Image 1 (tube, helix red, strand yellow):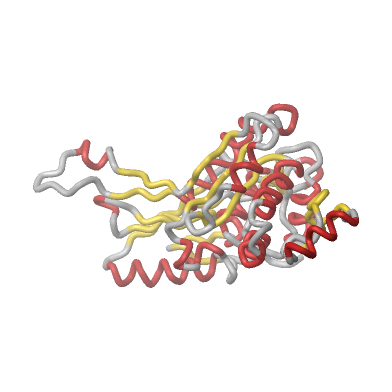
Image 2 (cartoon, helix red, strand yellow; image 1 turned 90 degrees about the vertical axis):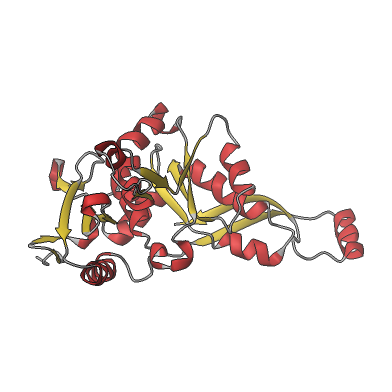
Length: 288
């Protein structure tokens, strides 16, 4: 049996596949790093799965800023995929749009997000900062630290909400979209990104390759299951959220089905000389 990979964190070891984030302490713990992990457990039929409430933290203290910076760079390099989105300095301050479909999975989408997804994502996309400095800081100053979150959560209320949100998304301000729902939620988000930019070839290509994370909360979850199988990881909400937090990505093929043009439409298009969108799109689909 193949041995699990291990990374040294102080005097302990962690499986890098379980690491959701590495955060720096504030105040009296400014020279500490905390590695947040969500270890997988064996369940029925020895299947591995994760839960949002099983976080295990490893804290390490350092003597100097230089030691802390060196350890942080080493841990980020050893714990996260080489192509991780969050290792790119351009994405360090960008937001992440999380689209949650509360109707997914028989009405359990919102509860699943709160229980298994949000705790994982917060480890990657929330940062604590020191309170304003004072000559004599009180205990309350350390307790009332400012938390900066890069998560922008949308709770959909009706069909089309995900499409509209992604169609209006500022691709320069956001680094990714995360869908917590089924295959329909994912399709809405992807279609919104691409369809709204159909008139601009460069914008359409950028939208088509914009990162989309998938967290299974629906009844079928075909795309999420394919990605989990490919990565040899459990297909559950916490494990999918962990994959988002870790920032690894892979490309998927997409199929766009077009409605055949009538002779009148072909004539109108020829006169307009517009070849950006050759036909009306009947369906856009990701191939997993």
